[in-house]
Image (tube, rainbow over all chains, first blue to last red):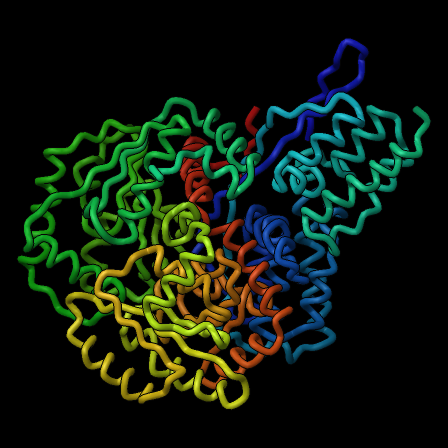
Length: 227
Length: 410
């Protein structure tokens, strides 16, 4: 999310934000898929957020392919790889509400039950611990006024800020796009550049690599754009 | 070098992490915290508070720190409580609980509690809350031990006091009991600027190994832990000997013993017996370990083991991961939170498992390097002291918004 301050020329300034999370223990746990499904159906939205968005933020940095807490546990402790893959393939960018994301996760697990009911008989040695999170987002003191300053600041913001604007903020804005491409399209009127940034596949990059990829796309654009 | 200031951490964690801490702290505003624990000297909690307190003060949060006072009888009781809460079977007489409460009462009369947030660490001062039921400030209990299987008698006594707090903090969901108050997770953390973790020059590392007679002609596999059955040093030797049939290497065991541990001499004898006269096994027994020497041993090692049978959080794993060392750890206690198997280290469940991973890592340096990088990254994200600072700031903000799960601060 970025403030829509207007400078003297009437264009919108992009103020970078960032976020942090305080994890809470819920006391709830699951040792099998049935219990996990029940937890997912009944838990607070903030728990779904923790095991998806927060997990993504942390696990991508170490190249864990199942950057989703549910998928990690299902793979590592239940050894149900197919289900872990299906959950890991859920693209967080397609969801701007936790409710729709939760529904998708529940649907995926319930469908799996019809395909492989024996998986629901398995008991994990290490249970899944349900956590919850309070997330706090806040503005930084970095402002971009145009593409050049945006590109320069991209090198200096934290990866929490990259993650917030590219992945998490749509939960606040309810938009179907990330902050960066939205601002580039709506404030700088650079549709093609915005579309290219929007197309980046976040599941294959760490957040630092994502930053590099966005920078690369902008650099190429600036090199070719008429001065 | 003096005590590092917050700006010194910029080069370690990145400028933007520190900048964001200051911005977050500006939202916290002019607030105060009092930390209360058992002692300012010795132990992991004191070590952590010695750094966290001044750094939080640099961020503009006024933090004071007091140790609870008591006689030898009080600290004998609280040590027994500590062991009991971690599962030791023992029956306590009524007078023990009365003595504990009397000392908490005595400390309550001599301390001030005017700060916005009181953080009480571990069981020793936990009953202080009892005399503050009409408080306007917030009190949180920070538990640093594994309370997943507490002694029922002690827990039955202590629980009513803990449930008077506004919240409790544990290091892991594995360590927390059921409580009727909000519980937060604060991972323990290492200080990257401390002697145990800071960068060392190669000359110093070489000097340390020379001092202890450790040749550098072969890869070194190391476990650094107290000589204690729970750390399984004999299992480490067995794993090493199995691995060495396939890959040439040297084993380094470095440790000390707890002062009040009668089993220590016995375990050291068993370790020496298991090692025999093997010239590739080096047993280093330290009476007063020097943090930079421990640091040097870790940095000189090609593989680090933490093959414990039981553990608390095992922050020694993070110390090794921070140094880009590939770590093979048992899947016990807090180790799996630090080692994500195959990404930030290798988790094992047996002597045979440990030996297989030693062989693998010594034969696949690219894998070892990748695990070291992943481990370093994991520690940077979750187990550094700057994260502890962030968590305390977030806690102050969270206590302001108890019913909200997402807040956007303007």
